[in-house]
Amino acid sequence: MSLTRRSPRTSESGPNGNSVWSRLSLRLKDNAEGFGPLKGSLSAWRIGMIWLAANLVVTTLLTGTLFVPGVSWPLALGLIVLGSMMGGVVLVLVGNMGTRTGLPTMSLAKGAFGLRGSFLPAAANVVILMGWVWVQSMLAGVTVNFLVEQATGFSSPVLFSVLCQLLVVCLAIFGHEGISKVEPWLALIILAIMTYIFTVAFNSYPVSDFAALPVDEELGWSGIAVLDVVIAMAISWTVLSAEFNRLAKSQMAGVVGSAIGYVLSTVLAMSLGATAIAYVVLDGGAAVSFDPTVIVAVFGAPLAVVIFLSVMATNTMAVYGMVSSVVNITPSRKLKFLPTALVLGAISIVGTTWQALLDQFTAFLTVIGALFVPVFAIMIVDYYIVHKGHYGRDILRGHGGEFWYKGGVNIAAEAVWVVGAVSSLLLTYVAHSPIGATVPSFVIAFVLYLGWALATKSVVRDKLVSTHLATGKPNVAPADS
View 1 (tube, rainbow, N blue to C red):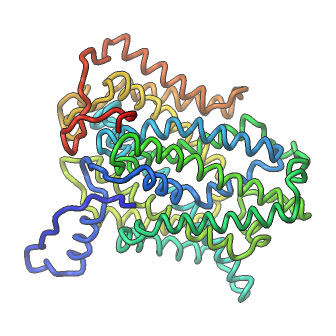
View 2: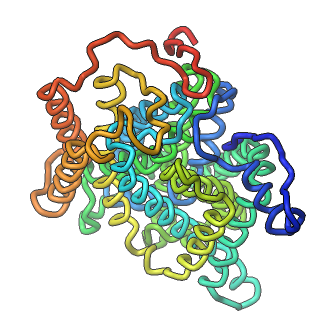
View 3: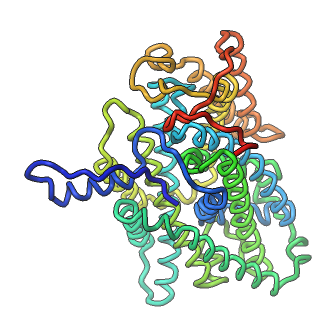
C-alpha cells in the first residue's frame, strides 16, 4: 500500500540545501500525504489487504475480550458480525467520497462544514488518532514488557511503550514507503498466527463448551451495549476511510475492497479476542478484559508477535493520518511536512507515558462515537444528497467560493453536529436508549441536516457530472467500474 502522492524530486537551493534537515524534509515531502487530490491506482484486492492489515490490530482484538462473559460467546460473535456490517456502511460511503474526489476525509468535511468550519472536526480527528496511537503503543509496550519481565525480571511498561512509539515515528518518517510494500505480507503472517490460536482453542475445548460458558451479568454488558461498541469501532476507522480509499483505481475497487477488508478483519480480530478470553475462563483463569498479558500468558509468543506487528503497521498509518489532517487544514499556507510530523510524533511519544488511558478505553470509544457519528451523517447527506455526489474545485480553496458559506463556516452543519453529539452522550449516560446511542444519534443528525437542506432549498437541482478533482475526468458509477 502507499498512502503517498509522489512528487517530482527537486533539489534544495541555498547553502543549507544538502543539510540533514533539508534532505529529511525532502524525503518526507516526497513520501507523505500532502495537500490536494490524489488519483489512485490500486485494485479491490489491494484495498482489501490495506484494510485487513490496518484493522488486524491489538485494539480490535482486545475489544473482543470486553464482551465475554458479559454476554454469551455465540451472541458476542453474532453482534460482532452485525455491528461490523452496520458500521461498515458508513465507512464505505465516506471512503467512496475519497475515491470519487481524491481527497482525504477531513478535506471532504469542508464541503459540509465550510472551509473554516471544517477546522473543528479536523482538530477532533487529530485528537482521536492521537488517542489511538497512544492506546496501541501502550498495549504493545505492555506486551513486550510482559515477555521481557518473564525472561529477565526487568519491568518498565512505560519505557517499552515509549520505545515502541519511537520506532513507529521513525518508520513513519524514514520508512513508510517500505512498510507499505510489506503490509499485505504482515496481514498474511498475522492471519496465520490467528489461525494457530483458533486451532489451539478449539482443539482444547469443543465449540459447545464455549457456547455454554455462563454469562456474568455483574460485568454490566448487554447485547445493545456490545453492538454500540462494535459500530463505534467502525466509526473510529472512518476518519481514515477516504485516505485509504482514494488510492483505489475505481469506485468498485474501493467499495468492494474496503467492505470486505474491514468487515473481515474486524470479525476475525474481535472474534479472536472473545474466543481467547473465553478460553482463559474455561481454563480456570479470570476474565480480565483489555489486558494483553492475560491472553499472551496462555497463547505465548505467537500472539505477542501479532500484537507488536499490528501496532507497528497501524500506528504508522495513524501518524500519517494526523499529518494529513493538519496539513490540509490551511491550504493557503501549506504547513511543512517535516515539522508537522516531528511535532505530532513527539506528542505521540510523550503521551504513551499516560498509562491510565488504558482503563478508559470504552469511554474513549464513546467519545469517538459522540463526536464523529453526527459528522459522518452530515457529510453523507451533504455529498450524496445535497450536492448530488459532486464537489467542485472550490473545495480546494482557502477562501471564498461555493463552500465559504458565511465567513467560511456552515452554521447549520455545526449546530446539527452539536445536537447529534449531545444526543449521543445523553442516550449513553443519562436517558439510556433501548437501541443504543450510535444509530439514534446518526439518524438525528441525518434527518436534521437533510431537513435544513430541504427547508433552505440548498439541494442542488441541476444534474451534475461528478468529476475527479485530480484529473477532471468524470467518475464512473460503481457498477460499471
